[in-house]
Image 1 (cartoon, rainbow, N blue to C red):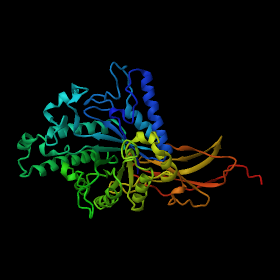
Image 2: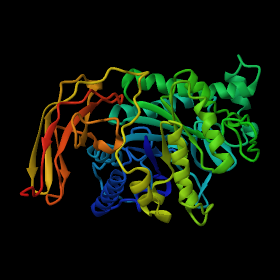
Image 3: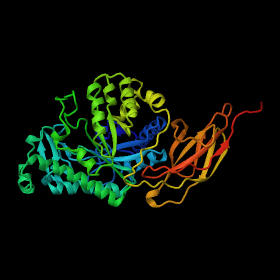
Image 4: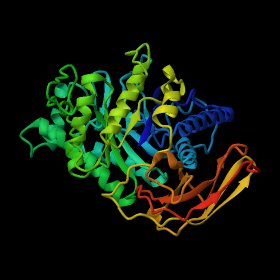
Amino acid sequence: MRAVWLTTNYGLDWPDKPYVTPDDISDQEDEMIDIIDRLSRAHFNTVFIQVRLRGNVIYKSKIEPLSPYIQGNNAVSTRYDPLSFAIVECHKRGIECHAWVVCYPMGAEKIKGEDNLSPALKKNKDKTKRYNGEFYLDPGNPHAQTYLLSIVEEILTKYDIDGVHLDYIRYPDNPADFPDNDTFRRYGKYFSDKNAWRTDNVNRLVYAVYDMVKYRKPWVQVSSSVLGFYDNSVSGVSPSRYRTALSVHQDPENWLQAGKLDFVVPMMYHNADLFFPFADDWQQRTHGRLLISGLGVYRLDEKDLNWDRKEITRQINYLRDRHIAGNALFRTRYLMNNTKGIMSSLATDDYPHPALLPPLTWLDSVPPVPPAKVDAMLSGEFLCLSWSPPRQEQDKEVHFNVYRSESSPVDISDPANLVIARVPGKMTFIPIDRHTESGYFYALTATDRYHNESRLSDDVFFVTGNFEK
């Protein structure tokens, strides 16, 4: 997996400004297309798009209002739906689109010096707690849990998302003073220990989200971004200045062991002894599910830690050498700005070829049927490949991977032979140089929504260029 977090809160990654006029909507769409195009050219295959921010969302919802970073005051009435648009544009390019949901935070107590007047906050006062100048849904209140489930269900029902990505699914920092004594008295009677009750509250939400998603759409992946250090047990390293996952009642190993996550994304935004040993530690805690390491490309910023670009390459190579399933980069804006050349470096050195997503074998391990009748023809400066897609069940909706090599059969174990991954439909165009191109064998596989790959199709040989000699 090669993923990015695309942050919509404050318009940090997208959009540049909220829309008011139809031209503003076109600008938002153009910005999104540019982002996804550039990610596609750099061979990314997954986008975590922030769909719920702090009691507001970026899609047409009956539960929470549209984010003020998406829609401005006195905006035109429109059918424009940013999430639907992002999903369509991602899928056109073979990129998965996961709905990134910020769970418990509901926003600051004061916004620009004024009381937070969020409609969602007003409607849910009985489910929230004020703590350190912020409002939070109370994890111990069953009605707050039901409310969050309804948000996930709405997204799942209305949109063709590929995953639900849970964020801030924990208590706030320094939770000892979190004001939930009344909630504990009311709902924690079976727990003698308040800390165990709090951890159980978070666990139950993760379990409920996973079970609901799999009941409705079993192919939709459930993941969570979690704190980068599970605990302080890594030999010889003691990150005492960082809070461990369990200190905020977040126990992702429990979720993985219980089979209630498909992959976990620890936010490992550190280097040296605060990165490499903890990557190994996380790998030992996955219990057969996937580890996707969160990497902090924002650390390249001169105003942050001013990392050298090569630090990200070192981390990617370390993860790759240990067969860790992939990485996610925070944030998209630093890639779009090509900070210290990071986007160029990724495209040419770290991600020089497309990559297939790791199979979700615990959900389904049966590969789809490969395409048939593969044909090739010249179309201007492109090679047009066409094929007959196989019939599939709904959850076996497939995309197609194009391979080529100078020999037959095509070796699909060589990543350099993968030309395009996850092509929708039954045709694609591959740019060629008609003056220098030699002969290649082309063949395809099918990939389903569980990332199972079919066997190889029959190949087709095609020659372009000037071979008069």
